Image (tube, rainbow, N blue to C red; front, side, top):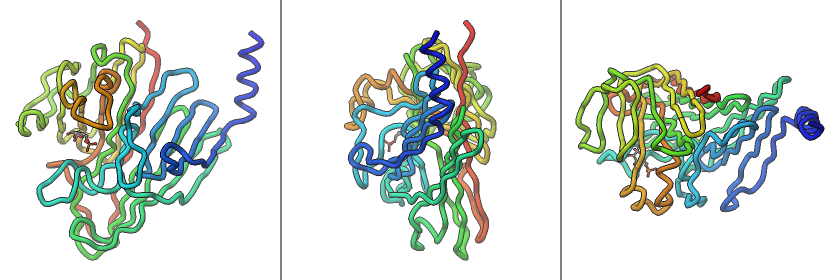
Amino acid sequence: MAQTRTKSAESKASFPRVTFLDGRGDLPMLEITTPWSSAEIYLHGAQVTHFKKHDEAPLLFLSQCSRFAAGQPIRGGIPIIFPWFGKPADKPGQHGFARVRDWELKEMAVSPDGTVTVRLRMPECADSPECPACTVDFMVTVNVALTVELVVLNRSSREFIFENCLHTYFAVADIGAVSITGLKGVDYLDQVEAFARKTETNDAIRITSEVDRIYLDTSHGVEIQDASLKRMIRVEKEGANSTVVWNPWIAKARAMQDFGDEEYRQMVCVESGNVALNKIKLAPGQTSRLKGKLSSAATVV
Ligand code: TA6
């Protein structure tokens, strides 16, 4: 018993704690510890790569093979997809450029209850065909849950049409024991079958092969049931009309250099954003907000 008492006395005293240090690849990183949880955020891509409640397994998956290098995306955590999703023919590269830019730390705040909030800003975009002049901020709030918000202000004089997505990689113990609920009856574009349009018929989606789906016109959250970890993850969202579900399965896993061959068993992406037919049209001077709140709880079996 002594041990436990000492631990909680120590945690209350020495948290919250925010440390700025060189992370993997010597990329600048924020290490955050609160009374409830720990998190890591790289300035590279403003990417949250780790979130873990003290009494639970990590919530986010990060590939053992991920690159941590300038100009390269990090494989895991929450990549920010902006200002386009996927690889449209008229765009240079996959999933936009926000995830490979080095963002600036603009603000950090610690609340009396121990909640830590940071605000990061993407380096200003010079006006270009892909992206008019705009300001892009990312807020991360760490406490018993992880809340993130992408805020885009169109500072140009023209309409800004773009896609955004919080491309979250969730850690699971065994993909075979995972189900996703909250998408029944929702239409989706099946990227595995040339974007064929289908309707979800399952109460609970199981992953038994490559899954790559863009669920459209859905503004409510979903839940991930992890029977092996006896954990339920709630994925809440605001300002997001699309949900993407992705698992590369065997062949795609083998084809990806920055992903382990067997790692498809330990992750599932459930992503909140506005992509494809749900892309955003932002008028000059207007601001768009995409928010995600990730929380978890033990499931009673
Ligand atoms: O979100 C699903 C998806 O668009 C898949 O099609 C797959 O390409 C995945 O993203 C990962 O993309 P990345 O560019 O990070 O390899």
